[in-house]
Length: 126
Image (cartoon, rainbow, N blue to C red):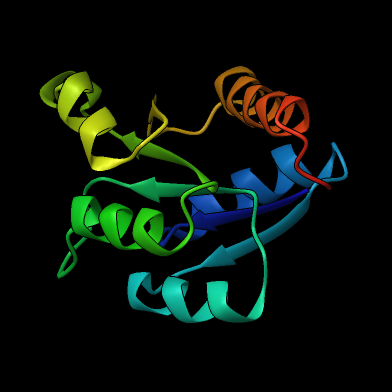
C-alpha cells in the first residue's frame, strides 16, 4: 500500500518517515499541494494525509478535486485545531478522517491500518 503525506514542516516529515517506514509502508512526502494531482496521474496512492491549514492553498478544495478524479482514495485531514472543524463538513467534502496535526504513532498507525483494512475488505489490491 502506498501512502502520501502533504507536509511542509521538516520535523513533521521526519516524524512521519520514522513512524511509517518502521512498519514498511511505501511512503511519499510532498511539500507542494498543487503537485498532488499531477503525482496521482503518475502513481497510485491508497491513502493521503492533508493538513487543513495551508498557506496559499485550500485543503477542502484540494480534497474535492482528488475525490472527483480518484473517489476510492482514502483522505485524512490533520490539523492543530481539530475542534474548529465540523465533522459533517469534512465528510461532505470527502475527507475520511481527521487527526491532530502533531503526528503521534498511535493515531497515525490507527488511521493507516484502518484505511488499509477497509481497502482490503473492498477488494482493492495492494
